[in-house]
Length: 175
Ligand SMILES: CC(C)(COP(=O)(O)OP(=O)(O)OC[C@H]1O[C@@H](n2cnc3c(N)ncnc32)[C@H](O)[C@@H]1OP(=O)(O)O)[C@@H](O)C(=O)NCCC(=O)NCCS
Image (cartoon, rainbow, N blue to C red; front, side):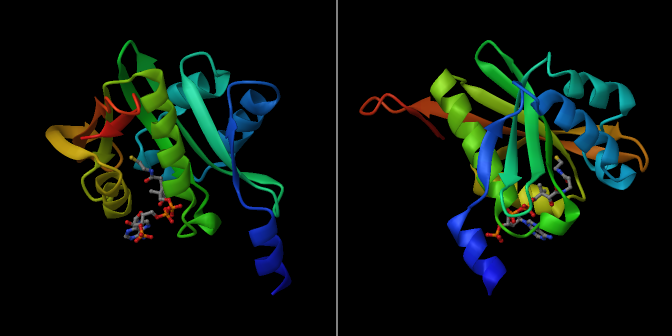
């Protein structure tokens, strides 16, 4: 009861992980990630290190103030008017609380505001949880990359979310 009350008084908040102390927090967060989770988005050690350096792209996180912890991260690259989302992750013990949805929706809204026209990502074919989430936020299947993932080898489903500009509010929404 007390935890419910404190959760509602201190809801999870989104943070920009590219500034301040966050890059080093992200590095630790990624290193502590269980290896089977890391394989779910195909990130090897080199890619994880690049993410942790904070140099390549845009990263956001979600912090649970009650736990005083970073509990999820999303990140990718923005290249001109296209974005490639490489990483979406919520700690195992914090899943099914709506945090992944909140984090990704916020990230996509930022891309909308930046004028991104299309966001791409790959997901393991068997990853139903992520695919459901992506569909519900406006992604559609663009194609399949045969054998894209290793350990275990699996096809990658390429998904895209196209953004259209709303002429009334001049903000982008998914098509
Ligand atoms: C995918 C992931 C980020 C979802 O995070 P989450 O915080 O648990 O997701 P949410 O609680 O916000 O749920 C959002 C939606 O995802 C889907 N979903 C999440 N977990 C699911 C599950 N176990 N089974 C089926 N659908 C699921 C549902 O559509 C859900 O919407 P609903 O609650 O209205 O049914 C999380 O499972 C994760 O980190 N997985 C490991 C890493 C990974 O696979 N990343 C994606 C790689 S491309």
